[in-house]
Length: 236
Image (cartoon, rainbow, N blue to C red):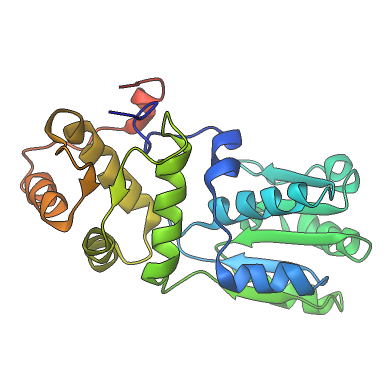
């Protein structure tokens, strides 16, 4: 098969950092701007992935960076971690209490801050006279989706050359079916690669026709979507 494992299984933070791709809109901002940046998007649109891609970008430039994810039920950020780096990346900032948001704004005046949120935090930043750049993750184009998929497949290939190619028609199919909902797309592709193991054609190109067949089976309920957290260690 030429793959280390199902490339669309649940990834570790280190794996996400390695495969994440910075969206063009974010790349432009982090390259030139130094003001705090908030990344807004609906669930599944790639906010966490984007922050991890940004982390990789700064690490490659030998700039110290700290990333913190706030799980559900956590309402405080780690000030010590935030102060220990040149760049602080905070994921799920909407979970902070109002007091913690104010503390974050005060801290951001002396450091570079980039955070993700489901809620727009412009008002509280403005109240602290903190300039803020907002990026909304939506309407991803097929060019960016192609970069995401190719990097993921290349990372999990056993050789230098990707073991599986994804056709342009397959990218168009995924974009038409899922839009910018990367989470739903990932779950579907996990099922695709579970089937692909035994049915992959010799040329190893993922096509729209193959995806359409799996999607119809998936939609009809003949393939029961499994929680791919149970297959983290599953390899081909």
